[in-house]
Image (cartoon, rainbow, N blue to C red; front, side, top):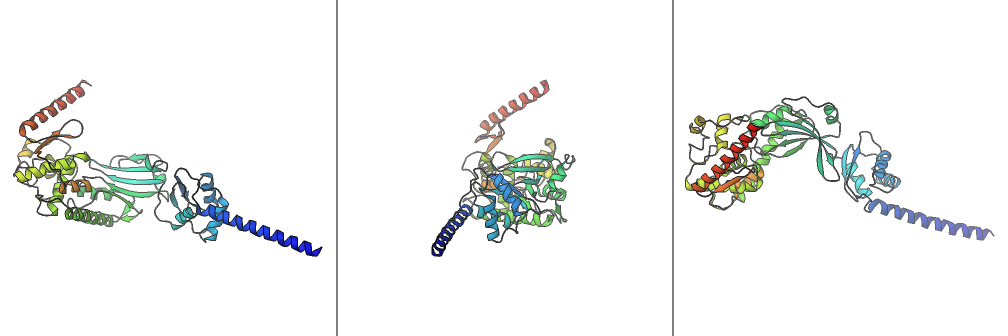
Length: 388
């Protein structure tokens, strides 16, 4: 009898061990195989959060099938106690193993709320926005103009949360003076700035920074990035361009940047100015004259006067030959590429066409017709405005 009991016990033990082994193998597959999440989600790991709470959030959000397996796997990897606070974008069908690696590696938050200081041509804005993980687009929560407005109610408490990312965005076509003034106003930056960098030497872009980042260090980063963009573009430039050096190309790029806000027009606008340079014609572009008046310190805020168009200054391209002595703004990468890869056209003129773009012409007669059409549009708009 005892022999049968022992035999049955051993058989049962073997069955249990096989079952346990199968269970372990199944759980391991669950841990490393793609998860059930169909649509990206944003997981917030709060300061002081523990693995039990995080696993529960993931399970309730549909990112994992079992909070227990998630916790067990994290403990087996010795990562259960290594959570880093922040907001993490969990991609569809992420594995449990991948999520554990993601939330224990740390680094910048990849979703959630973002505080943006935007330096624009006509002014600055402070924006609070949140990433919609389903679409990958940002939804604006609140905004204000730091020069003339106070933050909306509740803005500062939301903006100062520990896991809110901070970013400085510099719009194409702003001047170096505007960038320096903007950085001095950015509330989450620190440190002082020396001299205003040379015009055109700063790269418009979006820069993610840490709270308390040094203003001068960020400015130096912008300068280094623009230098590389220009060097790379110059190295791959089209043949036969009328520029003696990269600095002249940068000057042209800044003019193109200020003359059109339509991306598809940049290379056409560049072709007009290249054609005029090659024919020895004056560039005759208003933005250079405006820069000569303002020195790049903000908007002119009015139309140019005839006296300003006639006055001989280094930036008055109605009077001087060729390019002005330097850039009139900080051009973006696309404008630099347009200046170094202009379209092959015979255009010598362009004027606004009422759609936000321009009408281009090869002859003065054609240009005069385009100008007349634009004047008619202006007149109609003025009359409509007066009637209202």
